[in-house]
Length: 298
Image 1 (cartoon, rainbow, N blue to C red):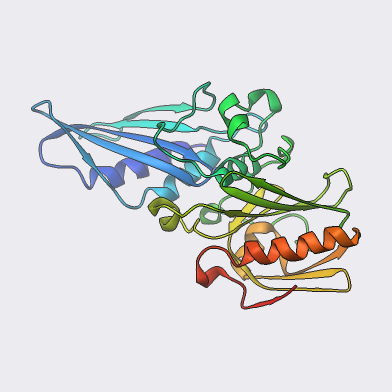
Image 2: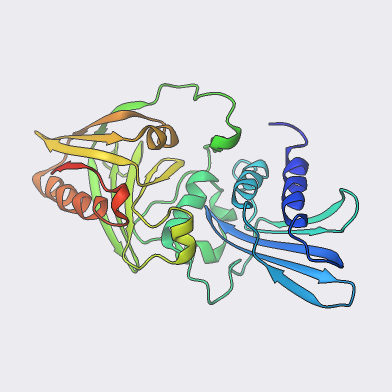
């Protein structure tokens, strides 16, 4: 990672917001709240006469996603709230990034999807004592908290090299469970009977997607593998003789670090297989049509 990467990203955000400034402005304040890829952005332009104007500016999601990664400290997490202040002249800026707050970063009228909590901690693991109380309160019941030992992968826009280990091609599942949390259904399968080892989660929201979720492509099911997350991406699935075969799009396979065809041996009882059959069908057929598998045999 370049030593000045954070500075470069803050400068890039400044360039984008400055390009949209109204006449006579003297300061612009960018206030970003972000959990996983779910976010809100408030941009305030202050003018010489003391008035303020609020604008929506496109093109900020990519730089802010990378800024979260650039600020990640292993086991400590990354920021939830980022404030950047810019002046009309020069390249200087003031930055404030908050990585731990007792109170939630979002306004009370913002409904944060449960999948955003899972996405944040799978991408940016934290030690248990550094997980804020509001995050524990919003965490989906029955979904295990990720460990803090893993290090997040580079986002696609700045990735310099492939993984140092082969993508997952086969796995054995010894436990399967489902949790119906308010607004979220989670189907989980794990390598070990106690729910540890390699874990694969399939999640769907039971609530109508809002404008931001649609814009971010989060209006479909979500697949989580250890520290990786993708929305949609299962092109086909087949269950036969206690073997589940999942076909992923190339983009989803790269995001999850799995082969495009993943073979899963089910070493579970008949009730667990039936739970998998009914729940996986329900989840994969949720959300927008273009992300549903073209072939399902369950």
